[in-house]
Length: 183
Image 1 (spheres, rainbow, N blue to C red):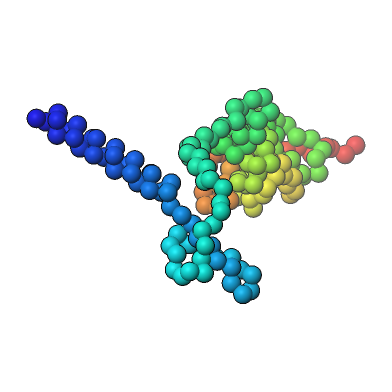
Image 2 (image 1 turned 30 degrees about the vertical axis):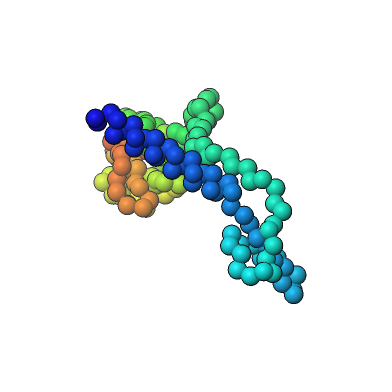
């Protein structure tokens, strides 16, 4: 009983769908051109001025889902994608730990590992010398003056430009500033 009811409903559904498709195929389109030369089209014939339009048969193309193609990562492209990623390596490369600096005129050049241009758009580098924070900068190298003779400590912070939060920090490096003696 269940199968015959299901079969009957299935057949009825198919016949209804066929009759709807058939009715759509049999629809007529009417057209009328007004006094301004504008042609009007309609499915119903409102007045005798409308005549059946001689249109080519309608071709229906079934839609297909759009396939998203993802370009595979290859050689140079992978480096470009890494630019926007989190900075993996952030370390102080100048000065080095326990370095003796002579004849610099009280200047120190501090440098962190290279950041890509894309990373520098997102982050700033802030150096700390002897516990004092300097102004964050968009460069991975900064020159500081007024560093007098003696032992000093330096480290760098990676700052997110939008949130102003410290993302990473380098190790603290101790360096020694010396002056040349006059003879």
